[in-house]
Image (cartoon, rainbow over all chains, first blue to last red; front, side, top):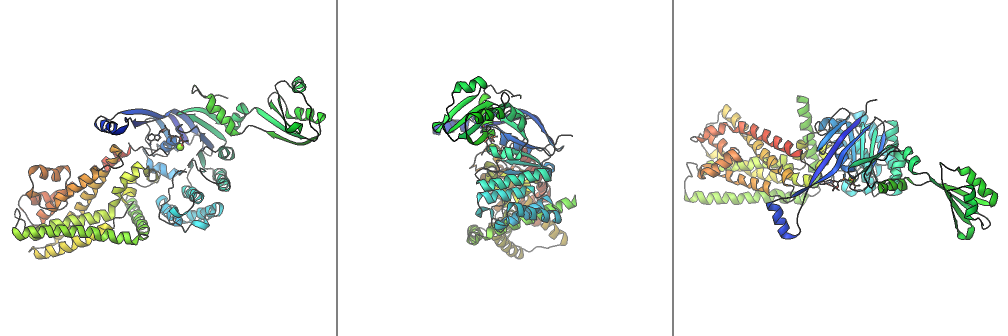
Length: 341
Length: 267
Ligand SMILES: Nc1ncnc2c1ncn2[C@@H]1O[C@H](COP(=O)(O)OP(=O)(O)OP(=O)(O)O)[C@@H](O)[C@H]1O
Ligand SMILES: [Mg+2]
């Protein structure tokens, strides 16, 4: 399969004006402007196959939005190559625009003063969407995203959650091959988030739309994406299956037990049988938890061990959240090297 | 090819209609805009009238002829701002990163910028300008032949193109200045004031500027000189369509060149 998106050694530098503080600083800058170079994206390479759903994550200022702006053709790269569906976005903007949809969570692409329905109908004209396709999509989106209640209102009068749903519909009316989402769930309540995730997943699975998603919400990633691309300071530091990251970094498991009679268990007894496991006893012995590495010990053995020693009322098993895993990766990435799992 | 241009035209009309719908929500503002700009221009008329009370003609141009020049400025400015007022949005679009939206749609960004606003204040200019033009022409004894009428239309269209191109080109400076309050386009715009009067009254430097550097003289004076058969200048008038094409190509080139520098906005 030829990749849909090919990014090779992509670089973007911005010039930031260096101004000394105060009026003299401003005047001096006017006379002899000084700039410093800021490399937002630093020789990034990756490729994405048709139908993939990729999470593009990294700390604030990592260069995620900048990458998406180059992929959509908004920004001209300083160096490197991009090919999206065989088209160079910044050179063949119009050709590229036909293949893509984009949602920037921070900003709407709807017309501020127009009723949402008008905005969508303008997009129909812009993308030359055939009447039947338009009708079908509008009906479908209205149904799933519940647009009906605000289609008649201008964009400036609808809530953030409504706006994001409308923007999502607007970006997909023309059935694009790729959908870029830059923080599509920012500032939304849990139920709107869930609805949006469900919708994106459906678009990915049923229409085969390729998804590149930027977010700081780890649930977005787990819900929608199969692949994880992590960047930091403009460099790709991880690229692989979400499951592989979890296997590599989320090896810790914790089993929580609730027991009927207070538990009297010495840490030594546990260690003798299970070296490397850690025991925590809380609530005067009515609750306890055991932490272990899932590649060294089996949960079953530990549960059996506990069942023999006490009257277990309740059990549940925790795995580290993807959030924790990614935080570990951000934090361990001190020397900015690519992490290999 | 033709289909593409028709599509662009239809989109233009739709965008303008959208602007109008949005604008109608602020009806009072709209009325004020139409009348205030018309009023300012009436003041200019009074000024001309006062001058011609004292002198019968200026450099061989009588009152009614000068009024044609004057009216040409208003009509072309009116039409240009009614249709292409969007150029003035560039500062906001670029500095706030709103151009992003235009760049991810399969339509020329220039078309989207030009149609991003409707200049209702242009209506006032068009009305007053046309009224003056009709009055002035009816006071000038001129032999109107069909070729002359066709030429007059060509000159008018060229004049609108020149004006709109200058507006687009000067506003494209925002790609370089990156200064939210840049006054450069306004400065260029005000050079257009010189074109309200026969350029023969100015010294060569100003004549050079309004002929070559920012060719506002082709919006009003040279076309009028051609129509009224005024000495040397009438030949310049014939150049108007060429200047229009040159300006349009120049403006698009400057815009596209600047667009490569567009940096969007960090959030
Ligand atoms: N328009 C711009 N002009 C100048 N510098 C910019 C611009 N946009 C981004 N940058 C710089 O590039 C770097 C990367 O920014 P970018 O917006 O791509 O980060 P991000 O990964 O999207 O971060 P966040 O998670 O906060 O959205 C930052 O240091 C930022 O200051
Ligand atoms: Mg961002």
